[in-house]
Image 1 (cartoon, rainbow, N blue to C red):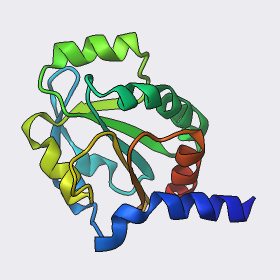
Image 2: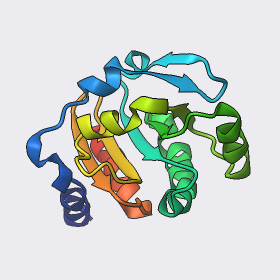
Image 3: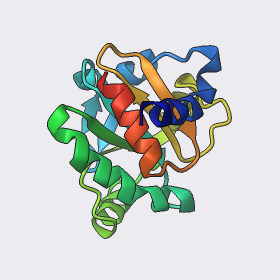
Length: 161
């Protein structure tokens, strides 16, 4: 079992070769789905899975149910799942959230989403993109592409350590 988890974690880390930092995330101010400002500094010290997505991204839509399950499974242990939409229209995001029953925190990056993804290690600026951040603020895993249940379990466990 441990070996399986190590293999999964090893698969998640290839984007970290240049040692990305989570500082840009915690310095960001994004918008809630109600278009209110949210300072991500409030999430510092918590284990996080941060997923960048867009409504038009088919793989993003596929992984949403797995992100919901991860939030449900790990919330009692303190993990927070945050979806950061590369979107600028809160009303469209609210409709999308309702349709996909997104129960985790959803924020809008508006114009700064691509730069934030790049600062977190996604040099290609592709979607979906997910980073796992431990309580000390270190990025412990990242993946460009859709996350499946095994990927999310490995990322959650890494973030919770």
